Image (cartoon, rainbow over the protein chains, first blue to last red):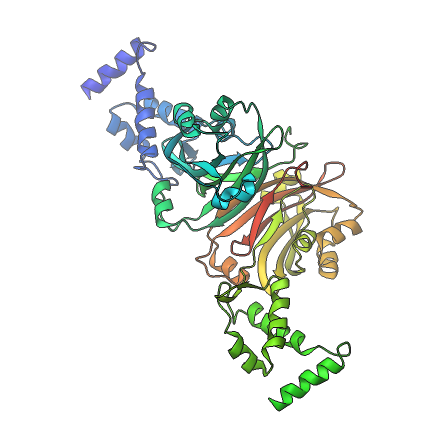
Length: 255
Length: 255
């Protein structure tokens, strides 16, 4: 206790030089949430218990909880307690559908990692990409994460030879938009999205870090360049507890 | 056999006065499918067995199967057999989203029945409909069926007093579009759709005639009239084995 009190005094004396005490507590609780030690919907321990755990007074603890509420990690219900919020992202299916930008519009920072890549015959992607089944595509498997939670898995096919080296570009930029720009595609639009839902396979559930009993939203899509040529065909699986899709016509979008 | 052969001869002699033999067989098989006696994905008994069941030659049987294939009930895979097709409807989320018209565009005839109706405070519908929570709405519960299979359940709220009598109008017309027209709404557009997926409740699964282990697509939507005033807020649950949603920007829709 003495040590914690000293730390609080330290933090108050030097607020800008290091993390303030309530910020450190908020970070610790945020880690508990993103690591799943506190699950969505779960009620946090009460103020007295949390204050004791961190060795701070209730004022400092409340400041930490308030910052978590402001950033959407928890929801304070008067008289009932503080609950871990479900992460529900509003993903817009629109003319320019950009994963990273879409999540930024929700106030979230997404990171997107390359899980695997390979060159293969277009096969099932051929019709959408206007290739023959034997022409080749570069296929990327990517995974998107928000606040430490996986929210989606994508399998994206890019026509070859036009986009040879796409995997390397994505590995470097973490962004399809940035990578396409390197190939001279300054703009692209979503020609169509087909939305369905199903149960995930065991492998998919594992990659999403979700139980196999939780359904997934499936978006099959096609992106085309300014001349209407297909640049990317793909399928994204979204974790249904984290993502919902919004479809708003252009002339309502400004409202 | 003799009787069936006579019936065949009769049918051939009078093709326009009654159902031809192959048409009657197609109808019988269609009933088997829509009643679930043959399940989606299941292989029909082979030609010899079916021809024996209906007491016809294989030529007549093939004519029946071909008509079922043309209407999308079955799929003939050369060398493997005839399979009952999954009923997957492409439901367009677009500027003018009309259930009956959408399904007609898929070549399907939908029937929509009124299951219940009541007048109640707007509550959770208030914000979307720009009402106070205490202003009233008329809420309709409807169920849509295609080829004898339930494909969706809708709960639709219409602001009162503007749409007083909506339930009666729907009961008579089986169509929201037709009913709104009676209230002077000659056109309306979809302001937004929010798509998510989840497992159904036991009651919902029962109403959809699906197992509770099959996920549902959920579309929350708002329709507005030509002046932008909300006319209907609603939620539709679609059976995920029967419906997928397509989102195509207006300028690609003609392709």
